[in-house]
Image 1 (cartoon, rainbow, N blue to C red):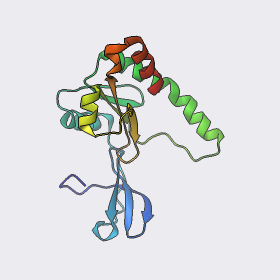
Image 2 (cartoon, one colour; image 1 turned 180 degrees about the vertical axis):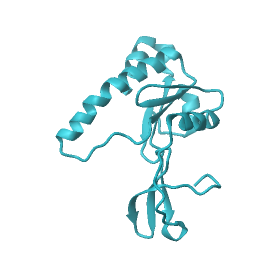
Image 3 (cartoon, rainbow, N blue to C red; image 1 turned 60 degrees about the horizontal axis):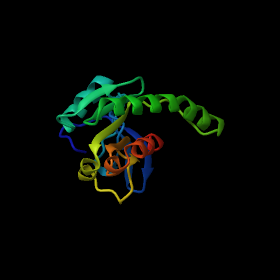
Image 4 (cartoon, rainbow, N blue to C red; image 1 turned 120 degrees about the horizontal axis):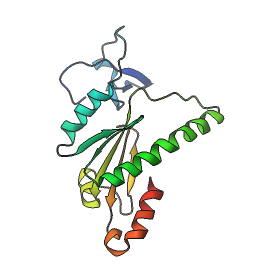
Amino acid sequence: LDQDEPVVGKVHVEVGGSFVVLLPDGRLTAVDKDKVTLTERPFQPATKEEMIEELGTKFPGFKIRSTRRYIYAFNCSDPFRKATGKILETMYPALYAYVERQKLAVHPPLTPLVVVLFKTEDQFQTYRPMPEGVAAYYNGVSNRVIMYEQSRLTQIAPELAMKQSVSII
């Protein structure tokens, strides 16, 4: 864990000599069983306000906004952030219903989902290098979506770049 204080996590799964633990902010981490102290204290997911504060620290200079289900840390344009939010909020109920129809266990997230929006591809690549052509990804360990607004295509064909952005979201 990247903190000094003990934290109450929720054991997600046991794998060999480790637990995969859900942290209060929605991230997953692997912890050796011998470094865990089991407790009866209840797991308390982080509040939206706590997560906003943490994101402000991790992404200095970024704006932080939230919608019903998501928190956005962004340095991209506000129209791009708003469009991303509208698409994600609109897709959520249909995706949830689809998973239920497949008879898979599903429940609302315990914490808001985090989306980090970079203005440029260079910033995106600096944050975490990705293979060429990757414009967005979901990290199942951090439980975050990471994407960027302006690709190199923006200078050549802005309309095509906007359509590509919408399809990525």
